[in-house]
Image (tube, rainbow, N blue to C red; front, side, top):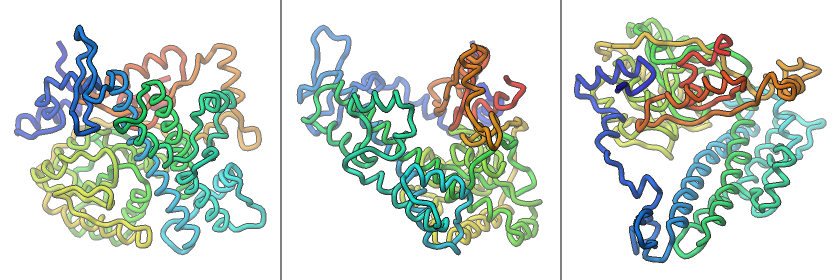
Length: 489
């Protein structure tokens, strides 16, 4: 029987080493939680009101209900719907941050943030109904940002980017009355509907769950994607490397972890500052090595070729190499265990968002007004920690990859500057050479073998002539397995 925790040998190596040293990671904590609560795993535990908590036995002879009378179906639907609302809030707050950053850049042309892709700005302006003729890029950006922000507060009508979806989808959404009106409105209504005594029809709850999810995907997430391209440049294919082997034995290692590139973009610039590079050498290092974890890793890989150290379940393992001077985090997917683990090494955990402080971490409040200077201060903090480094144990595994396949890049590759089109792709799907296109995204979970599900699924899709588009930790898993290079096809 294979008892390996991961299909990634670097992960298994560090887990064995950590276990021998008595270091606790997410895998040990997951084991300690077993057996998991059966009611919770089925979504049949309800603690929405104070008459409970209630739990429903799905296999009993008598059909159970909660104290309020809620059925198993209603309890499961409410729990899942609230997860949708929380996820939509997180993704959409990311989009809000990008809109506010674009607004700031438009009002402050001399600031650290600027408009990098004017063509993309004009394209999005047309989607949002913003006039572009005889206007400066700052004037256009200002109105684009304001229109993007209005998508959060809209009470009626439809969010702007819905019109980019296929016509058949739009028709279906309108028929079901689930086309989102405003991003914040759908999230708030989801929380209201799932309060005790409101929506008691699980089908109706899940329909609004779909509406909330669409507000995320075609609202907050779309806004984040498009405005990031405007601010930081639209990605095009780039070579990079992935896995813990990208950490350096001789450089100051700085790992950036989280989701919002307003931070990581400034860290990339700061890490290239000659004064800071000279300071690193003065402290005994060969230079500065920046690496990423999770979605921030993908962002700076796509635009700058910065290597990826790993995905979600590797954040603790990066610290346990003993080679990370600082792990800099913003929001989402950051384990609360990091400060405790950092105490066993010299790593400094640095938080940067007022929304996401962690007890035991050092906080640098990151603001748009002084973004680059704050990033330099954070890099300096890492450099001054280099002399405190002890013994390091960096796995050798690292893999080549090619990323950066934005919509615009794919369109160009299929037809060039003047004939860009999805025609060649469509033709090959129609004639059967390509069976289809699948988007595979998602995270890792210690309850199952790390990376295995992502890699196995994508290998099977490729073997059956299905093109795969990826992002998130799933993309990192497949990159480590060597699937993000042309040879894998």
